[in-house]
Amino acid sequence: MSQRTNLLNMLLIAGLLWASASQASPTQSTYKQEVRAGAEEIYVFRTTRTQHHPGATPACAAAPFPSANEDYYDLWSIELRATDSRVVNTHKSEVGGFTACLGQLVQDHPVQMYATGTVAHIPWVGVGECVVLKSQPPVRTAVAFTCQLNLSGLPEAYSGGFGVSSTLSPFLSKDQPATAHVPGYLSTSVVTLRLWKKPLGTANKP
Image (cartoon, rainbow, N blue to C red; front, side, top):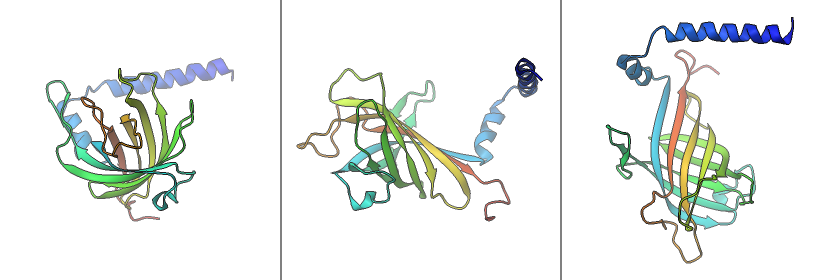
């Protein structure tokens, strides 16, 4: 069978699956069921940096790379305006915290990241990287980047998960505290965490 025939068959199957799925349009009850089903848990929060320790530290000894900095972040729930989804409260209730270990910053290379923390009393361990974005704010005192973490170390009921950040971090000089921020900007991140639950009946299986 030719590659062209294989491609046509794949496109046909994809089209049939799409047609089947699109016959029933999602309703409001469908969207509510996405949350009630409990197949995954989604947490959205902002971070505030409260500690900064340059160099390798004992807390970062478990990182799978040489750590250049250790930071600690408090996590806070946020509130959105229902009419347009704009953030109107970025500091509503404290929901957790985490320690972040960051690798050396090298131009044009991702920064490695290792983190341990809790959200809603759920412990997790994250390993991933951060990338500086091409789009930057119109100030020289902060840098925009995004981080992604693959999660492990979750309780038995979870099969895994990941986290993604939208981050704007102030530059820290030696005379600035860890809590330094740029007026008018959210420091440091808005994070989305997605945790997947194990199917019923498998949570206690090896």
